[in-house]
Structure formats: C-alpha cells, structure tokens
Amino acid sequence: MAQSTTTGDRRLRLAAILVAIGLVIQAASLLWSGPSAFLVFILLGALSAGAGMILAASVILRRTRRTRTSA
Amino acid sequence: MSLNTTVSFSLLALAMALVLLILARPRIFGERGGSILVFIGLLVSPALATYVVGESHLERAKQTSFCLSCHVMSDYDRSLHVDDALAIPATHFQNNRVPRDRACYTCHTDYTMFGGISAKLNGFRHLVVQYSGQSPDTVKLYSPYKNRECLQCHAGARTFEENEVHHMEPEQRGDLTAERLSCLTSGCHDAVHDVHKLGDKTFWTEGK
Image 1 (cartoon, rainbow over the protein chains, first blue to last red):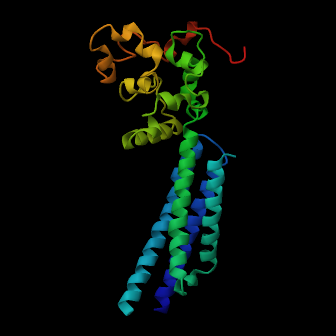
Image 2 (image 1 turned 180 degrees about the vertical axis):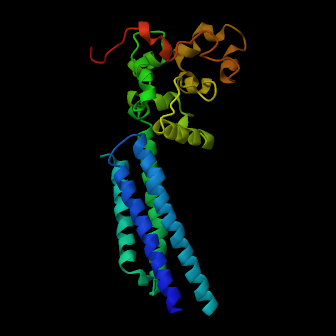
Image 3 (image 1 turned 90 degrees about the vertical axis):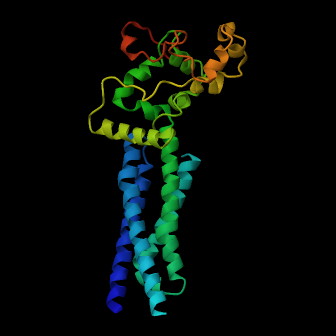
C-alpha cells in the first residue's frame, strides 16, 4: 500500500510536470503571432499538457478504484 | 494585448498555480478534498486554459497577416494590391468591402482552419507542408469556390439584386443560389488572384 502510494505520488508528480511544461509552452506561444506559434501550441504545448492530463486521470481513477475496493 | 490574450494568460497563470501546488505536495491527494483539488488542478483548469489559448490562436489565424506570412503566399499579397477594377480580390481589399485585417478569412470562410473537420485537417497540413519545405509552386483550392462566399455579402444588396444581368435568364438568380451557376467561372467575374499574370500589372499603394 505504501509502495503503491509512493508510485502514485511519482506518477502524479510526473503528470504535474508534463502539464506545467505544456502550460509554459502554451504561454510562450502567445508571445508571437504566426503559423509557427500555432504549431508550437499544438505540437508541444497541447500535447504535453494533454499527456499530463491523461496520466493524472489514470492516477485519479486508480486511486478511486483502490479506495472503493478497500472500502 | 487583446482581451482574448489577457484571458488566456490569466487562465494559464491560474492553472499553473494549481499545478505547482500539486507538484510541491503530491500527498495532498490523500487529504480531505485533495482529490477534488487534483481533479481541478490537473484536469479541469489545464483543459480550460488549453481550450482558451487554442481559441486565441484561431482568432489570430483569421488575420490577413497570418495567411500572408508564409512565403508561398507572397504573390497573393501582391494580387490584393493590383491596380485593376475588374480584379475581384483587389477591389474588395482596396475599397474595404472586406475588412483588410481579415480579408482572406472573410472570403475563404470554409478554408483551412475555419471550415469543417476536414478543412481544419487540411489547414494543419498546410502548416506542416510549409515548415517541411514542400510548398507547391501553384496553390489551389480543394474544391471550386462557392457562390455562398460571394452571396453572404452580395445577396440582398441593391446593386446586386437590381442588376439586370443577374436576372437575364428566368432561373438565373436561383441558379446562383443553388451553386448551379458559378459567379467566378461562368465568364462574368473570373478575374481573381491570377498570381501568374502579375508581371505586367501596376500596383496600388495605400496612402498614395
């Protein structure tokens, strides 16, 4: 249980890092206008944030299932 | 800074604050209310921020300067300044019949990012083609230009409706609306961008 919690914490941290990187890139993409800005937003910013969100969702779902099982 | 951009930065800052909180204290998930915070901080607020930033980028993509920033479009930029009263894009642009800062978008509303899903995918493909150095010599529309794009402004306008040429045949007006008769390719208004014929043209300069 303790190990899975640590693993879950690590995954959550990784998710948060991915989302943070995605948000920083998205903010940077707003600093200039043009097709390259849009590409940076989509291919780097949105993808990174999206990957972080998916990972976070999986952590939340696992934690929720484990809580229901132990209850 | 436009309102769109300001809202985007605000949402990004809010989302970032929540993410940093979770990053600093991942154990918060196990605390009371922590799961809701994680859900909002790592799912809801980043998703909302990403959506608003995406909308901001789509708004910028409507600007004429956005379309013309690619090298392959440089002749199309010149075609807007041709000194020719019969050239449709030029007369519309020079006489403010379309907003100059959104000229391309106004006339090509089903093009690239602004049409259906397939049009958006095509628009994204243009970006990739541009930056991978595979731009074609000749740019073509994916499908014939629709009368709808002309009629969105001209339909109902007095000069258009009272022009006897548009009523020469009994069904002509209906044919225009039903796209059976093209405004551009039926021999009437066929002077469009014509980028391969710019060599012998004179050009208008704003403020001259």
